Length: 337
Image 1 (cartoon, rainbow, N blue to C red):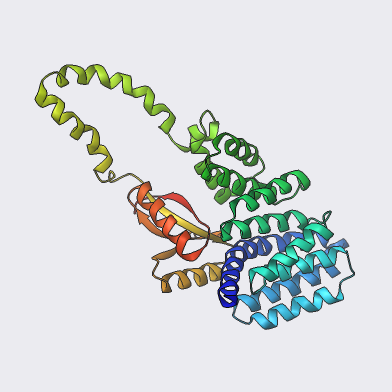
Image 2 (tube, rainbow, N blue to C red):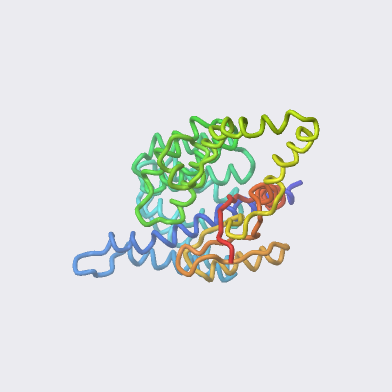
């Protein structure tokens, strides 16, 4: 039983690690630049970020013990309750070997460093970890706390995306749509990947500009066309043979393959800052039988698998992936080649 818990904890840690590594790697240069002294001279914060990035590379390259030991040395040197301690705790959690260890450090940041810029990041990672373990209610509580206690955190945009998605998945459409509409305005301009994720989810929310821009023919308009079809069919359905043939005509579009120009559907499981990280994830997925690939020629490098002709087929594949890998993912439309 202990072995099963350890393995499950490691799987959860890997799921959160993929997201945390991407965020940490993307934000590290910016943090270092802000911390730079006059004339661009390296500061203590610059040096610390360089050490953390070195530890990250060691972990990604399979030298986890060495990378974690490097972070431990930084944590031991930090003053208690200082910004340096919060940063070291965040990196130790990000590079943790299992979820139990990561969770302890994220909770320490949230509780002991609630004024730290990393507090919002920690709440987001805790929510993602609970979602990966299947506890959606606990995940929602962390995301609500993120919105309430760290409204200015850079993690708010990603947190609102997760929050809205979880609410939609449990059937709470109106609250989920409100969260998504508010979160869409928090996305940093130029964050194309996150914008696409928001626009995809907002298709389930009627009467928004995002719905209209994301889909030329939104599902909300389809019922309005039904009355226009009825007068055309009525005279044909009067004879018995015509009534027998009508259902076949109505069901044909649902079973007919998508038009040659129609987009396909894929499952996206990660968006990473470097191609090397994305290639590593792709290799692991392929070893487990997924036709994984990297989409994109610049960061973020998106890891996706499958090109399904219908959304229903993609949903089934995503459900199988979640059940088998205990990981997170979502659907995206991809063009036909």
